[in-house]
Structure formats: structure tokens, C-alpha cells
Image 1: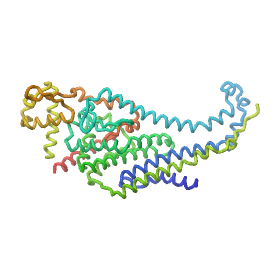
Image 2: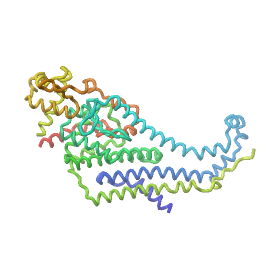
Image 3: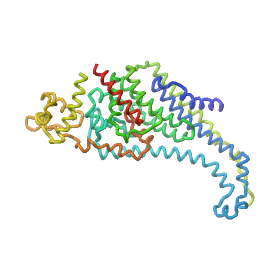
Image 4: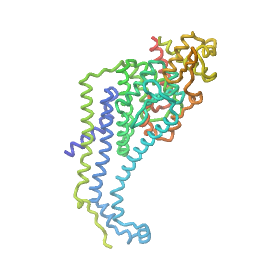
Length: 316
Length: 127
């Protein structure tokens, strides 16, 4: 059972990097990358769980905890209260603390950014815009879905002034898609999973791919409501053309926007059948369950009897 | 039709510039301040001003028999890019999770590529 779970976890981590997911329906691709991030987080927790069990049994650990530090380093060990037990406890807790801090820092960063957006809107919002959006200052073309608990579509004055009716309508539909499809929760969960699985190679690339496929999903959702891929491609290019140099941030997923524009220019409205959509959702649920299953051995490992973590103390 | 929409995009910006310069005004007052070369028909200017009002950039107020158009935002607010400044201290991943933008983060080379594609898209939309 554990072997199967490990095989599934490993497959979820490696497979998305080898498959051509940019040709796949975005919901499927996003589900795979999200599952890959969960599997990474699960794998890190499994490794920590095993370390908690295996390290106390290793010779090095036994030597370190049984070593009478105060006899070898009389002044420093006494002054710093350095004991074998302390070193043993730290060795067991450090990886857990490091992962916990990483996940907490990621979550705090997202919550802080969401709070900044809320404060910004309270201070700078210019009033209601088209289709329930909020107008914000700025001549650059900015269309964004902002906020976590009560998301809103932001539209800049520059977008209202420089986009034609078709571009504005399809651009707003794209942002409404992020809200309607609850992408923010997937992004938030993905960021936390990335924070947990940061030690695993490819975690940031997986997060960038998840973001990319959620953008594609929003594109497809918008095009099902307004069949105008060229107008959407045009908004993306116009937004890029007015982007200030300070807004151009190098990222691992740097080729993503051009890939979206190419897809929009080459392809007309995707209309997946009901069966395909259902299969996509089933796959998403299955993959999420598999990823959770891969992490399942951790609680089991933690629940082992205390005697298995045998830290032997040196005599006083 | 598409050409007309793009032309109106330019006219929209010009009309806002007039309103920021001279303050609130009627259709005729705004039209008379347009440069000679860009002075469109009364109904065209009226249509574009109404479009700007529907988008939330102008307020309309009836004064006597005519409507007076007033900008909702100042020119200083238009030129500011306060959202990027506000979020500048947030990490790019936190920013991306809290603000799903239509373009997201870009590399400089990609910006140039997209600017070039923009022309090709305009050509295809005009067809």
C-alpha cells in the first residue's frame, strides 16, 4: 500500500513535467499541476515523518545524543546548556519547524497582499465601472480580479479609455471567470503547497504552470460567453504594450503570456463536450485524492508508539 | 466597424483631455475645443461621451436643456500607477495570488514580442 502511494506520489511529481499539458483542456492541466504541488508537499511531510522515525535509530544520532557534551566542551557546553538531549530534540524538530515557517511565510505573504489590495481600493477606488467592476486610477491597461474573501474585478481608467467595446467586454469576462471558477482558492492552496514543498525541485515551476493553466481556463470561460478570441488576444497585447518597465518581472513562467496569445490567435472557441468536462472533474478529484493518499503515511508514522523514538540519555 | 471602434478609442482619449483642460462641459463645448483635424460630427462626440459615461469615467448632469459631462477622475489620477506602487513591497507570488491580472508577470523580451503581435492582431481584426 505504501509502495503504491509512493509510486502515485512520484508519478504526480514527475509526470506533469514530461507531458505536453499545454495542449490539454486547461481544467485538466490545472488539476494535474495542483495535484503535483500537493504531492510535493505530501512528499516533504513523508520525508520529515520518516526522519523523525529513522534518525533516532541511526548510529550518528545515538552517538550525538549519548555524547556527554559537558565532559568534552566543559565551558561552552555548560554555558550554552548544550546537552545531547537538546541536540537530539533539535535534530528532530528543525525540519518540521523549517517547513512550518516556509508555509506560514507564504500564507502570510498572500494574506498581506490581499489586505494591501483591500486598503488600496478603500483609498483609491474611483467608483463603479462596467459590469460590476471597480475603476482604479492609472493610464496603463489593467484588468484584474482582486481579493480573496470578497473578490472584485478592477479596471483601470487607461483600460476604459483605450479598449474598444469588444476588448473591454471579453477582458472583463476573463476576470469574472477567475471569480466564478474560484481560481483564487486554488492559487492560495497552491501557494501554501509550494511553501510546504519548496525543498522539492520544480515546485516554483509547477506553481507557474498552475497559474498559466488557470489563466487559460479563464480565457476559455470568457470565450464561451463572448466568442472573440482575437479581441481577447488584443487586450492581452495592449495590456503588455502599456505595462511599465517596473511591472515587467522576470519569472520562470515568462513564456506563458505569449503562449496564451498564440493559442488565442490559432484557435477558435473551445467547446468541450459534457462528457469531457465530467471526465476532467473526475480526474481532478481523483488526482487530489491520490495526492492526499500519498501523504497519508505521515500521520500513521507519527502515531507509532513513543518507544520507537528511542533517545538514550547519558548518565549525569 | 472595427476601424471605427479603434478610431473612437483615440477620440475617447482626446475628449477626456479636453474635459481635464477646460473642465465640465456640454457636447458642443467639448467638440469646439477639439483640434480642427479631429473635430468629429456632433452626434459622434455625443455617442463617445455617453460611452465614457456608461463606462464610469464621466458623470452626466442635466443643466437646462443640455447635458453637462464631468470627469470622475482627475488627470493626475489617470497618470498615476498607484496599484503597482501599493503592491511593490509584496512578493511576486503573493501579488499573483491576490491580484490575477490579465497579463501577469512578463520578461522584457516577451513584452517586445507581444507588442509586435499586437499589430498582427489589429490587422486580422480589421479584416
